[in-house]
Length: 234
Image 1 (cartoon, rainbow, N blue to C red):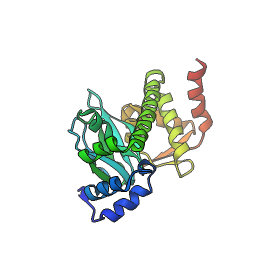
Image 2: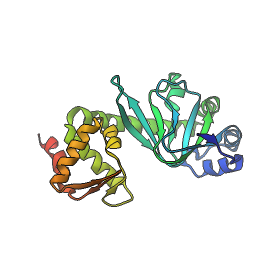
Image 3: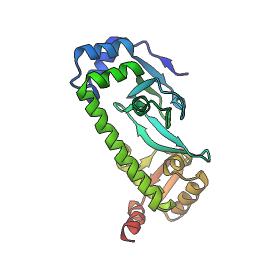
């Protein structure tokens, strides 16, 4: 179950002062957030919110990872982003006054700072530097979204999987080793699990990678890069 942590306002202040998002904020605003906000534990597999929910809070990740999921009309879930420590999520629904456009699921045991809607909107109005940083974050996410849409539109299934594996490999702390199940890979690539399993099986037989329960080991990145290069040369 997701629950409020015992950390008090002092712990919240220390966390906020360590985050670029809140840099330059007045002491009065920091104190208001610390007094009205709470840390929450979000165990792996639990949700902060669901698509189409009403929006009553914004969250900043303190620890762990939160997957942002979009459900298509067929009921298939696609992971469109992953939020880590310091990332803010849930702000767009507050700013637009519309229901949540995505769901947010913890893919690791996580802690988040929950900032109530009215407090967040007050920060946007009263703290120009905070509002500017939010605008920068939103712009970056729109750029990332455009790149993902381009990949979905122009890459075939193998190119999507190859591109995703190479991207995850570039940001992974464990060289060559990706902690990722077939189902999670399918969600991220916008494909069915069966399609992803078929592709990985084909690449495994070619000696490009190894697969196990919940992990993938890359053995031949060059072949994966060649798949992507084929699109660019077409």
